[in-house]
Length: 161
Image 1: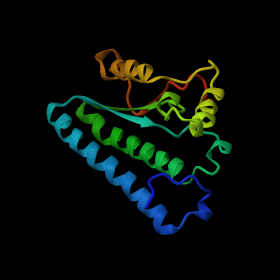
Image 2: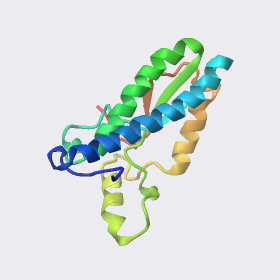
Image 3: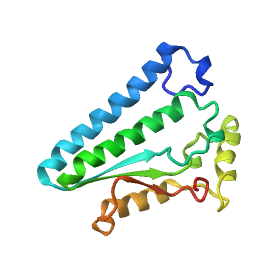
Image 4: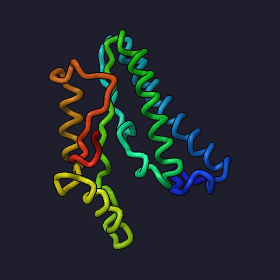
């Protein structure tokens, strides 16, 4: 089965959809459980998720198939983890980027997708890996100690209300 299926839901075979969602859930649960076990023992820690979905418009969800549903699942799990781990001093946050254009292969076939990410922004540029790293470092620090159970929007204005 393919991990990401960019098709309308009616066009995705049930077994392929289920396999993709199973992979998302198992990956998220296994990695978060492994980290949480240690953080709960020490009564502190930060778990960062990447992606996000709460602010994606209905139109932007069209033909996203397993990708958007997978992001929604991860966000639901992040909210639940935050509720369960918060009393143990563990914070959970999602970095919401709208896409990292520099992460796409530098080949002609990807040029349109990269430009679409940039065109959605208000700043005329997409968040970079450096931007993600800087924000992640801040979120993991004590300077962000009051932040948990939410998304941090670093989409350069592409995603918002």
